[in-house]
Image (cartoon, rainbow, N blue to C red; front, top):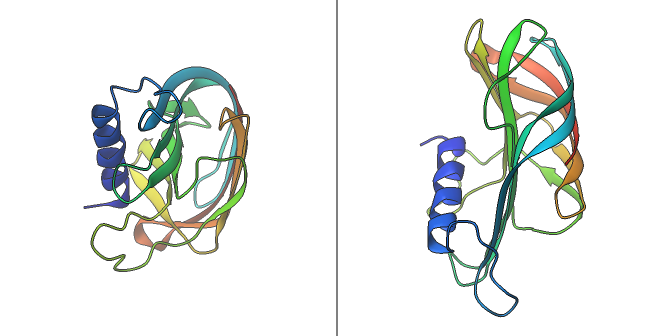
Length: 177
């Protein structure tokens, strides 16, 4: 199973277990905040695929702090849930940052070849769906994520994101919701 599918299953499981995305009060169980909101987003992709996007789009932000689930499950996910058009391409992108729900600067490294049972690594992906399908989801160097305002704003920078057929891109994204 791919990291993206594992991440999606993890998000869905956490949402179902925690009341469909409704925040729980402090001390009252798991906290899950899941929103899809309009955001100002700027994206620049260089290398094997050239994409520039700057404007409004929908952004899905999920923050989970569930100490009672899956060994103190904490993660943040920021994603463009539906393909957007820019530079003659339709694409989606996002990241899952496992182990934190806070603000600050974090790294997403290449996932281990075999992470072990029950271990879900952080991940980042760029999926081009048209004109030709190409996935970029393996950082060759750590990607840097900066989260602010409870993940409603921040930045993602990947200097090397490898994809299908050995292709490689650089990726930067800023957002503010």
